Image (tube, rainbow, N blue to C red):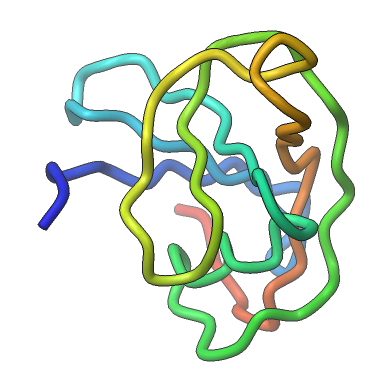
Length: 101
C-alpha cells in the first residue's frame, strides 16, 4: 500500500479540470504525470470508472507525481527527457461533473 495522497482539482468548467496531488492537505499540490498512456488513468482520482481518452498532455521537466497504469501507486520524482518520457495533463475530461463552491 502506498502513502496517503490528497487530490486537488482546479475547475476549467464542471466537466473539464486540472488534477493535482499532494502528500499533505496543507502542502504543495503538484502535477501528476503519465509514464505510459495519455493520462487517462488519472480520471480514477475523481471517481471515473473508466479511462476516457480525453486529456491534453504537455511534456514537462519538473518534479511531480507519476505512475504507469490505473490502480498503481504514484511515485514522486523528476520527469522529462532525463528520466524517460513522462507527460502531465494540462486538463482532463473524465465524464465526472464537479461543482465548485
